[in-house]
Structure formats: structure tokens, C-alpha cells
Image 1: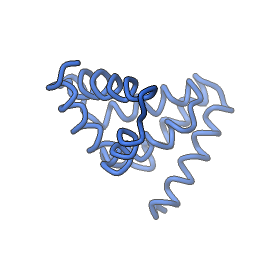
Image 2 (image 1 turned 45 degrees about the vertical axis):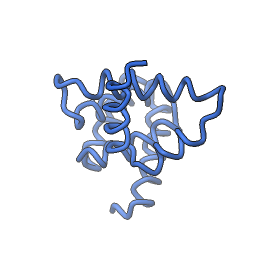
Image 3 (image 1 turned 120 degrees about the vertical axis):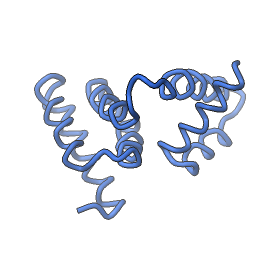
Length: 126
């Protein structure tokens, strides 16, 4: 493992997803899941999210679309929160999910809309 890339990834992951969530994920890892936590932190967050080519705002929009396409509700919820932390607006999230309805299917988009509505309610966003 590249410790510097892991450390940079951990910092970004904590900023985007929230320190509490990330710390809980890492501290809750056991011998079976720890390698995955290390891999995700080093590769996804350390090698990709730290690249200068796209701002975090854009990366969040892309993640919401891709996770909708893959129909991954747990990750959608996590990344809606991350997108909000990255300055993505409620209207931008709505537009991403409308776009995914056309290209990924209405059922997947409906699920993402439902999850987003729950996140907005939890965060007190009207």
C-alpha cells in the first residue's frame, strides 16, 4: 500500500463523506473487510478523487448518475450526502436523477429520488 496516497485518500474521504462515517467504517473493519477499506481509501479516494482534472462537485454528480445506473441504494444515500457536502444543490441532484431516468431506467431513477428525498428530510433541506 502507498501510505501517502492512502493518507491523502483518507483526508478526502473524510471531507466528502464525513469523518464520523469514515471512521466508523474503518474502525468497524475486521480481518476480512479491512483490505477492502484500505483498497477503497487508497485507490478510489487517494488515486482518483485527489486528481486535479475534475472538481469534487463534478465527481459527485458523476457518482450519483453511475450509482443510479448500478442501482446501489446504500451507496446512493452515502453519495447524496457527499454531494451536498461538495456544494451540489438539491436542484442539481434532481436534474441528475431526471437524466438517469432516460438513460438508466425509470425504476432506478425513482429509487434515487426516494432516497434523496429522505436525505433532504434528514438534513432539513426543503
